Length: 112
Image 1 (spheres, rainbow, N blue to C red):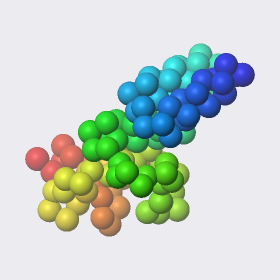
Image 2 (cartoon, rainbow, N blue to C red):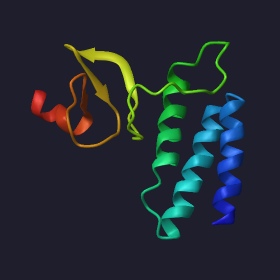
Image 3 (cartoon, rainbow, N blue to C red):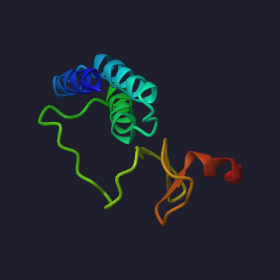
């Protein structure tokens, strides 16, 4: 567990330094370590992996300081894409449900 904590700190430092590919790889290592330690539901690492993936595609603005502003009170691994389908935004990962303004990936097949 101490190794997972150490790697998470390193991953977060890389994330703040805008080294998103390296950070993502470290967060994946953390997730693997926790899965081996019988803690497979590592929401934090999954959320950070999603953020790294998104920032690799769409880098944050120069004034970005790493602070994320929540759009809901829920702590999930949802990442909203700027691409929309009608009025629904696609969530890359998250619970298997549809909310008023977004649809999850698992619900996309029902839209086709």
